[in-house]
Image (cartoon, rainbow, N blue to C red; front, side, top):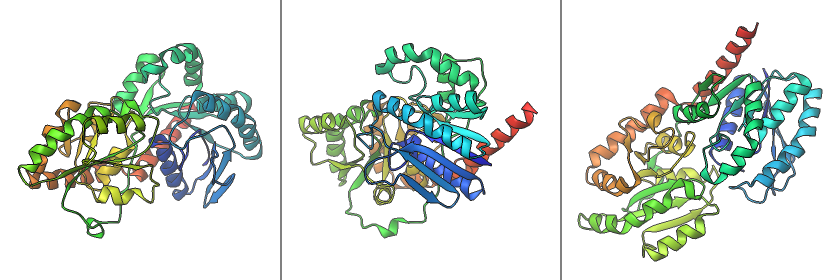
Length: 380
């Protein structure tokens, strides 16, 4: 197939959705498909990138930050993408357009279908579904008619978790929504490559925004530290990522007098992240709402037990490899695994097993290709 992918975020820009886009594009390429990606430019990047069967076109727009995008920046991407996408379709014989996020990229997919009859599939990420973020309630209400039109004209709608599908169905139930999860790959690195300092490392990796819930976990750290000190253990909470909420989190750390327990490491590249996963003992994810968190899958691929909240994706990801709890109970669960090294090892091995059985990127890409082919056969 000749696949056009439209995404307003693509690594090194963006978060989990951008990484999912990259991994799928790579898997399509390995399968022999040709992939063209239309995305946004950022300082230091080339306008056009060529790699095997993948060609990336990056559009100069108003994007100011790697980890965060405003509605104005999304709108700017749409206006820049429409003429370029039109030209690409004229010059190439694409079989399908895969849209990452119904908003903003779905507008481009809809335009290409109406003008060139190019079918498109939408891969939901979370924030593109009305009701996902309370702070966008008014915006969702305004653009809801547009979203329904985009969804109705899509060849296929795909959510990356059962919970996200339920949320999408609550907004629009006139079209079947398939579930294809995000994925991960088992890394070749091993723990012997990292020198440990003897402390118990608690890791969080993600954009620093209020929805991720780190602020709800931080106040538990001092009491957890005191309990662990009694059994000769020191705990350290490592925060990897950046975003608009970082200043607020740093203030909480100061107010709670836990500066000795928390490390802010900032945004890290994909090449830098492995050392943090390898140096950790457990991964925490106190998010209030998700699609399916890529960082949890990544943590599992490195053999980390996971403690996460009851957000979308938790039902599929946690199966005897950790705990799904209210954030207020995180500290008690961490203390339990610190006290039981055998339990920690068992859950870590189970995390890797789950990735191998259910979430390898190769298998995820095959599910997309099978779905596309099945829909084409049904149309014929």
